[in-house]
Length: 307
Image (cartoon, rainbow, N blue to C red):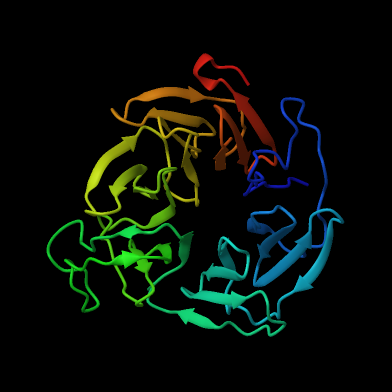
């Protein structure tokens, strides 16, 4: 039986699944009844939250045990994304039911404390930003953000919930409940994240393009092409110093672009099926990929094709 690996997780220090270069399995967490789609760890690395079908699981990392299951009515369709705030008190989930739900982890109540229902299709990305700064709301093409929101609003943002959806929009929820929608060329968004410096969105779409979008002006700064992404949710990332863009691909290769000029630095084979997720070490050029072929690979110094 073929087991697909759709998501990987690094600790905040850079190692959970593997130790340095020897790829030793540290622990296997068993107990999911369905495919594990996404997972996130608390900042202290004591707990992992995973999502499978419509279920949310909380794991004690040291014991490898499930310590909490949320009720089976969390979402009406499968959960696709999960995120957590910095102090580990709030959990955020997005689903194919187009909803984003917020959960108070300090409470034993399994009901969400907030539901965001603006998206018109499956949630494909979920990011919690708690960096203070000024965000200018805008639209990539034209003057209107849609949904009755003006595009020239500025304000001090303390906390933001940032979501992406198959409907082609990125939405930003701030403390004042303002919503920003960004038109993405009419192509569904397959994944979304932020660069390391938090200044740009990195948005993957099913037109096989990755767009670097300025967070303040909402302008497309760069487009990265050459890989294949028509069907699957493929996560992308930058390396530790934001000098490279990395993405999996449906041609089974890991692609690496130069951040500034958008040229392909390397196309690395090795997997035998679609690479669905890639993560970077927080302080050096070491990367980990997962694939539908069921394997996880660690890449070090990829510029010289070493694996």
